[in-house]
Length: 395
Ligand SMILES: Cc1ncc(COP(=O)(O)O)c(C=O)c1O
Image (cartoon, rainbow, N blue to C red):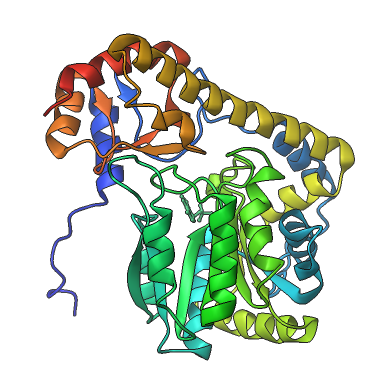
């Protein structure tokens, strides 16, 4: 039965990480996999999470099944975190899922169950798992233009021109903030135009927000999503607690469906539960327990917000320092985009040859396509990184 399965090349990011681990050089730099690190190179467990875990450990009454809906209280607090202050909060339903990955797949299954002929439009480029998740759900996937390779910013005109051609059979997957892999975010004017186009043409906006709080802050990062849900009746949302709560391995996220009425949202969630039953059944509970413990407690919420702000400010500081150092060394503005980008990543577009040279000659590990995990950089490494990049430029 399994003889016909060909050997597969492993995941390129994980392969790069193994190479990095085995590299004996002490000055090596890991700017590959998308996790936040502090200035000592550690991915810390947040203090709010540590405290919430202790509370949870001491008070958890049972390990019995939670049911297909997952943690119902978590569903409430996560919907509030994202939609508080919008009318959508009164016509939505959230489903606790195994990470945003689980949410993406569940919502892909929901689209397929209700509109099997739909095409899901993803940005070019997009998060590496968007296409396979939607295709595995049975959906057609197409790309809309997104990044201008020259400016490394969003080509908003090209993007809007393509979206204007779409219709009722189309779903448009958007990054709520901190676009992965580029770091280039949509302006508020363009979010407004997307909302107007969705209402005019009938496409369904699907906002994936996996880095809430890591761009400009918890309130600011919701501006795009709120622009959409305040004007468009039906919207899908996937969200992750991996990055902003540092709960990567706990697999904590949610799928939220915003509909015309609360009843439609509840009906949709019932279908989403049925779809979950057909795959993972129920999500793991621990991460959701931690998140709800934090968000239901004023003091813990304050600690969490403070820690998240520190993380965000560290990354913004690194971005500004990169630009200042580039400007000083090159007397040019060609790397200013690092400070215009938001969140953990910046897509440099460095060639394969340049990436290979950075790895071989300088021990700097960056994934194919040139996505740099700025959030993995240490302040003290900036001069070394910039010298290496400038030495390899032109390859
Ligand atoms: C844009 C985007 N969506 C979803 C995810 C999946 O997140 P999770 O770890 O919660 O499954 C990621 C993770 O990197 C991401 O970058």
